[in-house]
Length: 87
Image 1: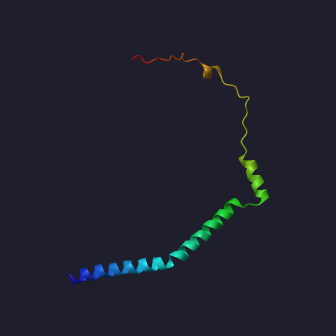
Image 2: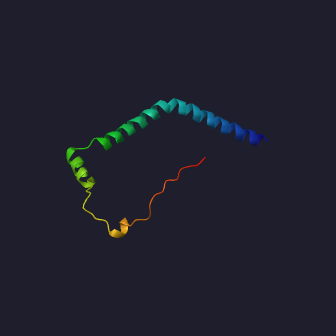
Image 3: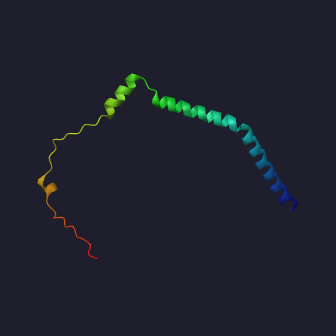
C-alpha cells in the first residue's frame, strides 16, 4: 500500500514540476515558434523575380476553344416537362 502511495505521489510531483516549468518557459517557446512561422512565411512569399517568372510560365494553362464534340456527345435524351403541384 505504501509503494502505491509513493508512486501516486511521484506522478503528482512530476506533473506539478512539468506544469510549473511549462508555465515558466511558455513565453520563450511561443517566441521561438513565432519566429519559425515568420521565417517560413517570408521564405514562401518573398522570392526573387527570376524564380517567380519561371514559376508563372510553368503554371500557365492554355484552353483551346476549337475542340469539337462528336455527334454522340450531343444526342437528345428527351424533353423537360414541368409539373405543377395540384392542391
